[in-house]
Amino acid sequence: MAQVQAISSCSSVNLLFRGSVKSSHRIQDKFWCSKKLGSLQELGVKASEFNGVAIAHSSSSFASPCATHAIQAVLGNDKATTSSTVILEKPLRKKLNKVVLAYSGGLDTSVIVPWLRENYGCEVVCFTADVGQGIKELEGLEAKAKASGACQLVVKDLQEEFVKDYIFPCLRAGAIYERKYLLGTSMARPVIAKAMVDVAREVGADAVSHGCTGKGNDQVRFELTFFALNPELSVVAPWREWEITGREDAIEYAKKHNVPVPVTKKSIYSRDRNLWHLSHEGDILEDPANEPMKDMYMMSVDPQDAPDQPEYVNIGIVAGIPVSVNGKELSPATLLSELNEIGGRHGIGRIDMVENRLVGMKSRGVYETPGGTILFSAVQELESLTLDRETIQVKDSLALKYAELVYAGRWFDPLRESMDAFMENITKTTTGSVTLKLYKGSVSVTGRQSPHSLYRQDISSFESGDIYNQADAAGFIRLYGLPMRVRAMLEKGL
Image (cartoon, rainbow, N blue to C red; front, top):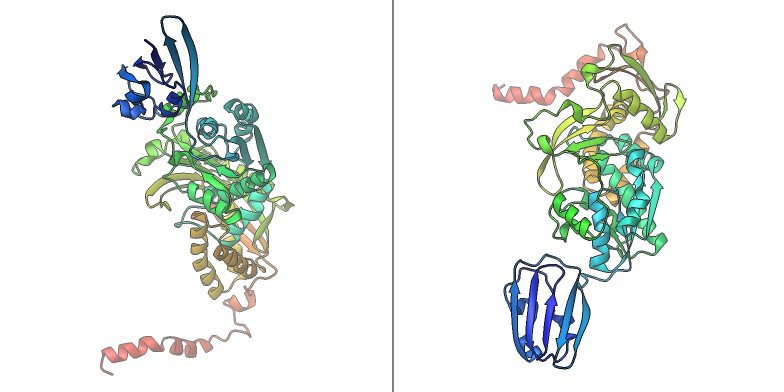
């Protein structure tokens, strides 16, 4: 009597089939461990296929999912015994050729590399954008990527592009989300996603992938950019597909697939850093009533520990765009780096807020934006000289919508691009310089000047002048206040 004993590498399940085997290769088509063993039918095993009785016994449930499974078949009879091994492949979710993955070198993206290969049968090109997150985060990335199974790593320095083409337009527009947030992460995602589309074209990839969770804003920001720039690319978002639910699951998956697990100390906060800001979320911050811990901050000193003497800084601006610090012209990225250092040592730019995420929930975040806070103060102050009342009001109202579009990932939306054209035109006279005083977390304006200033000292002076006749105010007030006067007369029966 022949017998087949099947041993799955993903669990301690044994199958013993008694009877003659018609076709041992049919096991490959039927055997799949995707859930807990409940019946023979769940294994896809039919007794009739083995011309005998199938008996299954198990000491544990199947692991989910399993990539490949080895079945050892022992065929025995009175004359000889034959042993063979059949490798069972997990069916692909979809066949892709090559995927460009937004890669950081952390646990999540390291695990995504083999997961993409396993589930989509593709090559993985890891892509890392340098947007000013710090040199330490870029060290050893190529070795990590290849150890995880990537075919190559592409790193691009996007710092100048990020500041010039994304940060400065938002600064010129005065875009602030929900009164506080200076859009640090929101501005960084489209520049990264755009570069991923470029890399996908360069390497011949047919898909892109990111490690954003299904509860955040970043998934929207990445994917809207992909849609806008190359709608033919497939998008893979593992956190919306896989069975991994947390850090321990990811570590276990990494070990099973021989992926080196990063040994860095796990931060209790979820952070995102670039040249514009550093954000902090999670842990005790999830309770809005909790004060952030002092040692959480990384870009700025505690205002109480800042120098006891103020520091003055002069910002040069041309057409609404910063160009110099203390009279020294600098490139966009260098200028911002300089102001981050200056502002950070004075505790400038700390924001603690509860914001409304695009996906519907509220989220508490703490942001450090030292250089950005200085620049916003400078540009807005210069506009007080160069823009008239109506223009400022319209610009400020549009800035709210501009910020909303950027926050929602609609950077390449024609509406934002059209609004940006308006902002560029309306600020073409916003040229000059602003002097600010930095002291223990505060930014105070001490002086501003512009060759296009609408401020006229000879008109604004309390001394008598030829242009403004104070007696003219009487007629203006009577006409301006006429609607209020008429209403009062009606109420009093006059």
